[in-house]
Image 1 (spheres, rainbow, N blue to C red):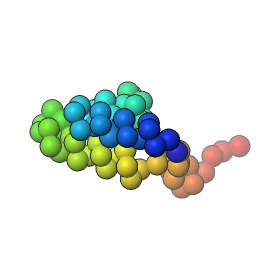
Image 2 (image 1 turned 90 degrees about the vertical axis):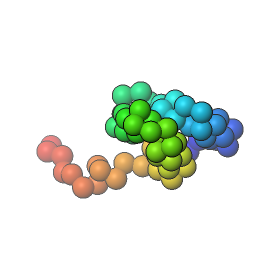
Image 3 (image 1 turned 60 degrees about the horizontal axis):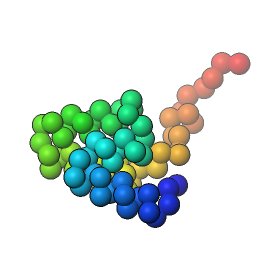
Length: 73
C-alpha cells in the first residue's frame, strides 16, 4: 500500500491528466493504464472517474487471479 503523500499526488495527477496517475500506480504497460487512456481520449470526465476508482479502490498488491488458476509443476 502506498503512503498518504504518494496517494495524494496520484489523485492530483489523476484530476489533471488521468493516465499519469494510473501510470504512477500500476505502470505504463498495464490494462488499467490503457483503459484509462482510452476513456480519457473518448471523454475527459470518464477518464477522471475511472482513474480515481482505480487509484482509490483497487489494490495493486493483491493478486486475485492467481488464486483461480492452477500451475503445473
